[in-house]
Length: 558
Image (tube, rainbow, N blue to C red; front, side):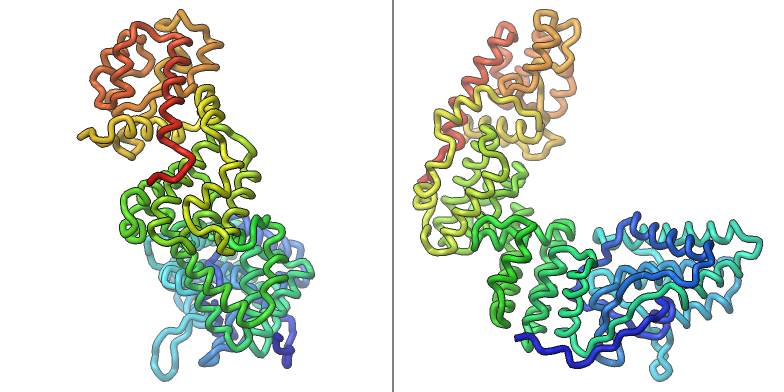
């Protein structure tokens, strides 16, 4: 059971005084700087309004702190407010430096931003962010230097600095005595911009406080809640959970936005326990993960799964190369299709199947995904439910091979007849999907061709034979029919980009000469047709539908 809270200190403090009085560090496992432009602007505007109204104080909320090594303090909750406030203070310093007011600037520097150690003479920053953000924060904010942004959090820090500089300039421009006006701001931040500081004796206690604060209305993300719940119940294994969480977060943030962490956790959880909606995730985890060892196990599982999840964004990842070209092609296809509802199933396959079965299962999953996209059957919720339920069976050991996966799922999959009919009638409004379908069919038609159709969109373009706005070259087709038929798959093909530019809105006779130059057979064959009508579009789409059944079969190959 979690340890009882043995010592807690709660007091009011000005956020500026807090920054000047402590050596504050954001632990490595905490999330990166997350405030967007609106949140930064709101903070500065609210303080400005309070100052203009001569308000005796402005309340900024609660900050939870816990002791760390070497007289430092870890911030468990409140890093966004602390970091943003320091950004503003640093911009006041920069303004004074630019005016040549070196003494006042140095007072701000040593009072709030960084102090020199009396023994080592090394400069020590008052606020240190997590390991991902801190080098950028120290260079750009603390030292007022230049550094290329490497993450979205870096961009947010840079944006906060820009907004702070604009506020400082505006304050100065609106006053006959700009230095006094800025000093008034610093005084207000120092003493009247209040926070409730909660000092807790241990990190485990701090997570309990953090969770209680959320229950009382503090707005936290699901990922933050889950993290702090696991930290709270991990007790003597806290460091193990923190390390696993930090590694997981770094892996996900290397390929996706920070907000994707909650989706990733939900996919991992759904792969083991069946479909879990975002609103249910926190409660479901709290119900099942109740002990120290379970907290460690889940954190380790998330970290291990994060390696596979991040690899899904890169078909060239060594993991896929080791599994062979069929798997690499499947990973590329899953990325191109931009469907994430299948990820619980992908994670379960990667975690539990032998390599030989992974080589059969992942290409099969691509086929299923295409069939659902073309048919549009069931919607994304039904699709995720099917894939999550099947993933749960894999995790439970009920399904161990690609063939068993197919047999367990076939009743819910679009049959050949249903898929063929849907393909024959499909309008595809998303160009990236149409390009993928046509490229796959063209490659399947000519597997031994020396010409390999490029996967890069800027090299191979989507061509509409009948343009959306045909003009005088297409008088035999009405504008209404052109609008209804121009995105039919039968009216689409793929071409080298240079040829596609030449085709544009030309007549079909002129386009035929261009199609004849194409190295892609499904495009070159268009040059043999005498004309292009709605019947031609349907006939070609019917032929493509017959091929599609072969390109994306239901059962595993081999």
